[in-house]
Length: 315
Image 1 (cartoon, helix red, strand yellow):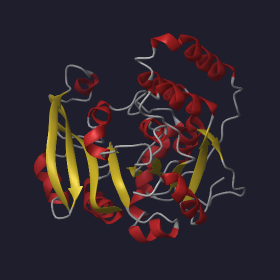
Image 2 (cartoon, rainbow, N blue to C red):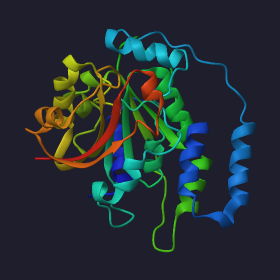
Image 3 (cartoon, rainbow, N blue to C red):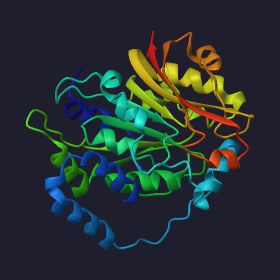
């Protein structure tokens, strides 16, 4: 595959460019075997604490009714679904999912309904070109700020309009990549992290092509399929299939629980195959009982709660 750094100008040419606590948790995962560099870690933490607080940005609500629930959650900081560390499934299956062998073997990776997930920076620090799609502007603000410095576009975004926003890696990301490098592998952060601010159900292959994003090599879906309302699942799955290149791998994390509630909605293996089986070869990787480790699901009325991971290869 062509180096992402060589491909970057082509991608940027097609963009309409838009106007750390979570990252720190992700970063410390990368440094868990770097005990000899505690001084650098301390300096990073101090740099984050000293950063001046900017006045909060108030975004108008999205025009799409299906996004209103998530707009309210972000507005009220009710984001218990946000994880402060990279997802264990992503870390465990990184090699088999992306199958990289050298520093130039980078991937174009899609993150649908990404929120402000630290998983995007976790991969971008390794040089991959990561594209998140998220309908809530406040979540995009946090995502791009955690990666570094957003490239401003000027002007306001009309409610419901779609655009691409871009962030360049900051010093923290560059230092993190340097510190997790080894004698045999040198990491350099991707030159930019991109976020498509808009409704994923409207992010079709044709729409992606307008931004210079043709087909994606890989996709990580944790909390996407299980977040959309059941009537929208088929359309969501069709978009995933349309955006992935043949042979591309979707690493999918769903949940199964009783009784039914949501989001996150319960999506069992039979439904995963019904939604994706025509376009993907679906293989279940794991099924983990989470009811004891995460007892808050009992508070929501669950009598059972499992997290299930799949590797889905585009036909």
